[in-house]
Amino acid sequence: MLDTIAPRPADLEWRLPPPPLTDLADDIRALAAANHNENWIRSLSVNGATARRFVGYFASLFDAGTGLLPLAERELIAVVVSATNGCGLCEIHHTNALADALGDAEKARRIALDPHLAPLSPREHALVEFAIKVTKAPKSVSTADLDELRAAGLSDPEILEALETSSWFNHTNRIFISLGVRPDEAYFTR
Image 1 (cartoon, rainbow, N blue to C red):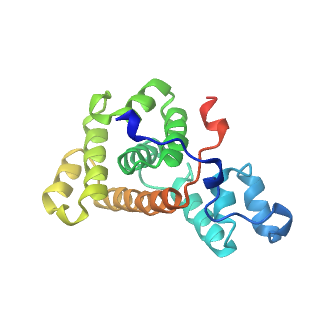
Image 2: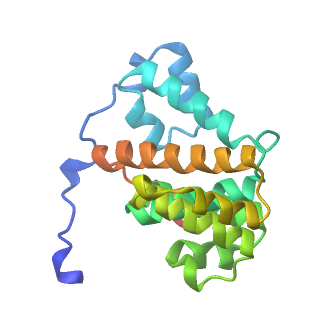
């Protein structure tokens, strides 16, 4: 399998080259700075409106003080969806965030590697299975799947938030995979 992975040419770093920071609108330059000028925000700066929408939605979905699901469960979903889709950028970024939310870097890395081999609670397991199903076969999601989440202790509003988080990461993964956005080196130093 490894012989099928070709080295990535350096000229593919920016499939849609972002404008220089000095050419960005003040609010987009501030968004980029607030996000450490990381590759993902730089890639979205090609279109200021896209960057604004993305950051706003992300902030509303992943603010630790909001949401019905605990932040660790939202990060769990982000990691599982991103790993399933093969979005290395989102997978490593959210594995680090999951490690922080759990206070357990090893468990977070095990989940990213293969959630079926990680020590999950019944609730976490139900969320993982649901997120994978939403990612791979959304038309197959049934009332029985929602009943499994209820049996694991999730309320209907929490189930909708799990679906929203799973769906949003499928959307996000497709943007960053299509743009070929590389994870920043800082993601690997943790």
